[in-house]
Every structure is written in structure tokens, then in C-alpha cells.
Length: 214
Image (cartoon, rainbow, N blue to C red; front, top):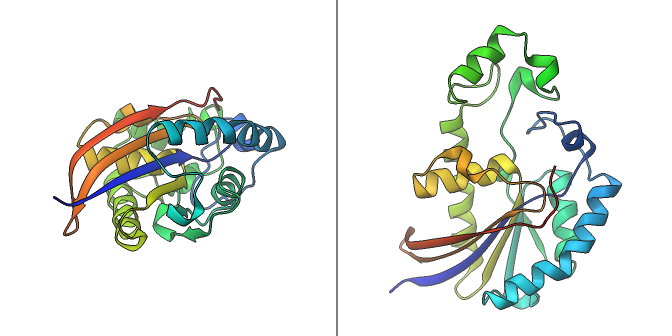
């Protein structure tokens, strides 16, 4: 029997770019908007109740390993939700590189051939000048395994990252459809699994819905 790991993975709070439905990836470091901060503070108590009822140690900083993307929106969210915990920044948790689509929204891209090609591929081809979904999935999953190895036995693991990062981890981990793991701001998944010799077995997970949507 391996080490039983309970893990929270959560998308950051709302930004102005999220409100404008822009592709905000690894090249755009934006903070939470005021609405996003307020929603995160409002969600904190609810989140800790969810964790406690599920057997997670989110309120106990001694038994929590907290990791985030290096991007401001993730670190701000983590500091609001877990104000007493030490944050471990992981480069591999960055959002996907949207390349030439970075910072733009559907209306600004819909007439471009490259965007139409990407849509028609089901999002599987690389963004022009950016990452492919497969490379991104391997990057984020690599960061996930690094966190598991560094967190230590018996600790709850909490990860605050990006919508794409969650999709990349969950899709690659489960083999299920990438888009089945889309989440809104302050939403994510609670995972429970066995981790031994660098391998994950007996994985189960539940979705967390904060009631706040981008």
C-alpha cells in the first residue's frame, strides 16, 4: 500500500481579462480584479468547510503543502484562501502559452485562418507561436508529480493554478477528455489516490463548484 494523498487543485480567482473572456496565458501576468478578490475572500470559509468534511487538512498549515503557479493571479488567490501557509512556487504550473492568440478574445480572432484551423482541430494543434495541448499536458503533469514528491507523507496537497493547468493535469492523469475538466474561477477538483514509487493508483476525484463563474 502506498501513501494515501488527498489533493485539492483549484483555478485562481477572477481577473479583468477573464471578465472580457480573453485568452490569458503564460505570457500575461495580471492580478485579480476587485471582484475576484472579494469572491476569493467570500469563498475561503466555504472551501475550508469542504476540505474538513472531506478529510483534508486545509486549516492546518503544518499538514498542508501549498503550491502555485508563479503568476500573480494564482499566488494572490492562494494567499487569500490559505493566508498562513507557505507558498511553493512551481514554474511548470504556468498557464498554457497561447502564442499569437494571447490577450485576444473570440471576436478579435474569429476571422483569422489560424484561429479557425485551431478550432477545427478541436484545440489539439499548437497555438501559432505557442504550445500544443500534448506538450502542455506533459509540462503540468510533470509539475504535479514534482509537487507530490516534495510534499512529504501525510500532508494534504493544495495547488492553485489556472483553468488550463487543471485541464492538462486531469486529462493527462485520467486519460479522459480535456474539455470535461473545464472549470470557472475558484473551481476545481478534490482528488484522493495512492502514491508509491512515483506512480499514482486508485484515483478518485470530485468537482468543487464555488458558485462564481468567469
